Length: 418
Image (cartoon, rainbow, N blue to C red; front, top):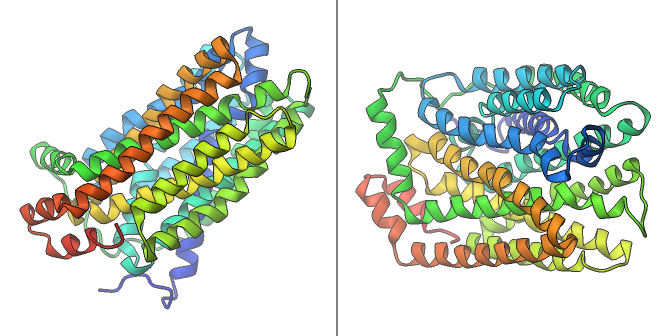
């Protein structure tokens, strides 16, 4: 089979295209995060209410990912991804003209719903088109686009909001993303290993149930919930104490804190390669331990240590997400990879929508220490789940699941580097 490998002519341009798509999605999805404090002040609402401009987008993304999981096998991969990215970039332009909080939340909800057409389809595309030997590395590159997209979007919006309004800053971001959409269309090859089929509701439901029959997959979905819920909560509220005494940082300086995302660009690729050679469950556990240690370090009153702790937390998150998401693709039945990816991302973004606002309540009640303690406990649960996934695979749970569905090739892969 003609899979994309490092020797292929299409390898580099496909990597760039997937990186750009990931960049666009995350820049749009999290564009309001660096200005939550500004939105709260402008509309005279608490930070937890202002964070709904982010939670509405991630919540809609989670809800519509479930719809995508049922229809992913019916439409051309590239066309769906292009539609999602272009429409989202256009809505970022629309945000530039919105000055009413409920309307802003509604637009962000629609934006999140449209973006649901990209991430699970992109992960399915990677799993279908690339050589399995480089899957961890390719997913790492894809996730590094997440970190750079999130970084650039936050820097643009955070820094420009001091000079202009936050609305104008988001509109400028939308224009930049539209330009990158053109490059995405040019660079991304069409699928060679996907045949769009009109599926019945019964067949797609059977595929959905097939994915949740695997205990290991379900635990990986829960790990995704914990990873993203923790990450969004920390970044939603980390800047708020920094804008207060004794630090008194400006919105622009708080925005530049997101440069820390660059460590995620490195960790996602490095951890992905490490998991290809060693233990996936071990790398996930290590990543969550790094997140927890970094989070505890942010309790320090010294600004430099706070930043270092956030960098360690970020390094762990992107590494853990890179490995967990690639492992889902490996354990999933070949015919249901898009559905499996959708389910992982469904849990992933529900974590963002649920844990994020709850973290705002802990901030209101106990300050930054409340956020740290609640997320640290959640991370401890994640470490336990990673250990249990390893135990399930070692005991042959995934092997029996694979045998039941007569997919011996993936049965063999599922047991490697657990």
